[in-house]
Length: 125
Length: 111
Image (cartoon, rainbow over all chains, first blue to last red; front, side):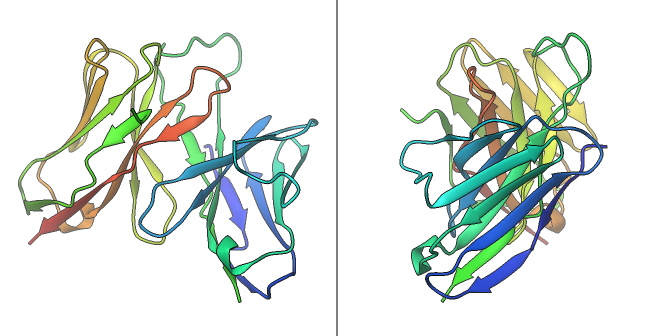
């Protein structure tokens, strides 16, 4: 279990247009999902935390009006890159974490890691 | 000091040898630690998680945790060319469970 599906896997768009990326948890409910961006030869940088039914929480330096996040259901979060520019070209990855039901103490065991979607390669021309 | 630090590598190991990867973290209250493998152009995949001090083994992988030294490592035994990838150490922040990644260590296993 704990499968996260991300779509599309790659997209090319023109400068000034908007692109929507979808992230779905297929076999579990995720009240929280995370959006990352990765530039070539760099590590993953967290952009924002997507919260079901409430506003996303953005990391410092990430423009909330440019990167719109919607988490309308327990299995779907979307990231829309608005007015895309070539510098927005990057690898965007979503993540969710399956946690066990009932009381759970961090560090108590299990292997409840964060599962990542397959990523979306965005190229803005 | 970065929150999660790793040597960038590349770490070059001959096939069949042991690859040893290190990671240090700054937050003393961190409770869980994850190792991910990322192939070029792909998203990270979870290899190991570890929560308690000591060793945890899973197949050819062994994670080692020392909370007093704020140090977590990953050993890959009998390294194979297919193990060539970037290995990412990740630690959730105490608040919000946001996963923070190290810069990653690139491993090259030579036949």
